[in-house]
Length: 222
Image (cartoon, rainbow, N blue to C red; front, top):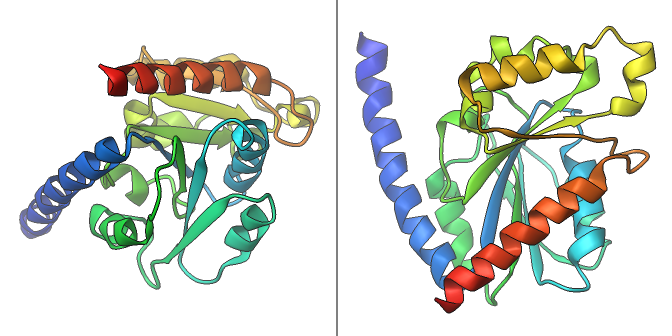
């Protein structure tokens, strides 16, 4: 009970800060996607393909969350888009207060803001940062049981990307079982099967993001 009493105020306080962040992002007229996955699931590779697809038509910002270092930031910045690094030092997730510290560094308007959260399936799901929605990535080497073992993330994610489908011939991964596990608690989840290595499935992902960007644009005009 003591743990619940401590955690609840933390989450409530974070939620309040996330709402303030949301107001700022809305004022910027940005589509903000919080990308969550395990280490090695393919977050950075997914972001790289997305950036390459949209950077010439939209203003894109990537916010990189890592415990330490700037390895992914340097990789993304080579693509010619703006990148902001957040190092959490000891925390296993980004929270709304960390995101709030970034806001003064955003000096111009971006159509699309991609946030690469710290590699973790548990903590990042609990803390909102002011995003439009969460995008979860599940890679095939992790196993098809992860949506049942880590239900919160897959329950909250609007979009779930099953990555590394090029490895399916070599793995004991049942795609339909994974999707059933996702939709057990999240029947409205939008699921894509992709390979960040080969590009398979990304056309559908890009069409979805295009619709989201168009919807955001229409909402802002209204």
